[in-house]
Length: 277
Image 1 (tube, rainbow, N blue to C red):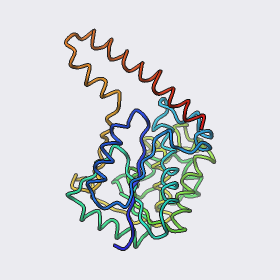
Image 2 (spheres, helix red, strand yellow):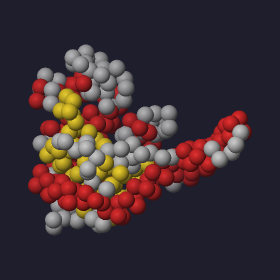
Image 3 (cartoon, rainbow, N blue to C red):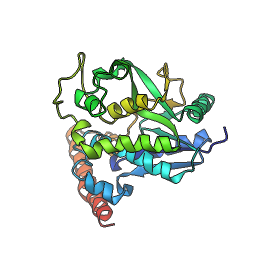
Image 4 (spheres, rainbow, N blue to C red):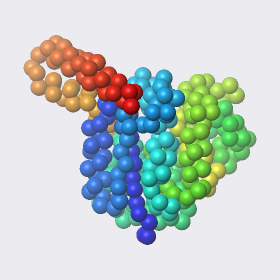
């Protein structure tokens, strides 16, 4: 491998404990030139202003994961052409004992530009028809009926092609947010539709259009990036500490006092500070 390798991830303020664990595991991998970590306070002001009503805790994925292509694009801007960027959700575990497999994936990225991890379910089960129609692939079974690629993690080489890829991913959120969120599809969904998968639905379609290298059979746990959802948050820390208090009603009261204090003082002050920049 001649390329320099980087990794990026994101967590909102409540998930900072998970981001810290992720950072420590990335260090232990001993393969990354730098680690780019993002949280809601260091997202760009223009981006936050545009999606202000979406980037909050009452919206799935803190804005239906619209921040994901944004931070990937920002990370690509920091590295040189030909270098490799790994993205992984903060809930993932990085396992240094499988570093050799990670190196194999990096080699795929050097050759194919984009490496995606494929699930054993077709896109039409988890993508609404309006999004297929946006990409003009509604009647293309090579897209709709082939296995979906998850957006939990991906590996990408910086090239003009991959910059276009990520820009197209992000552009969907700007063009029509309804294509990413849970708004019902105007066009009838395809047979077998279960639910929409937001950023992943967009990523999966684009990864096929851009001929990404698909990795299969990666869900056995013996992987350098383990697709768990270990998203321990500050609320979990508060709960774990109050469990030491012997009386249930008292635990409940103290837990809510601590949580509300954090939510109403710490979070709001940080949010105000961020918006003033």
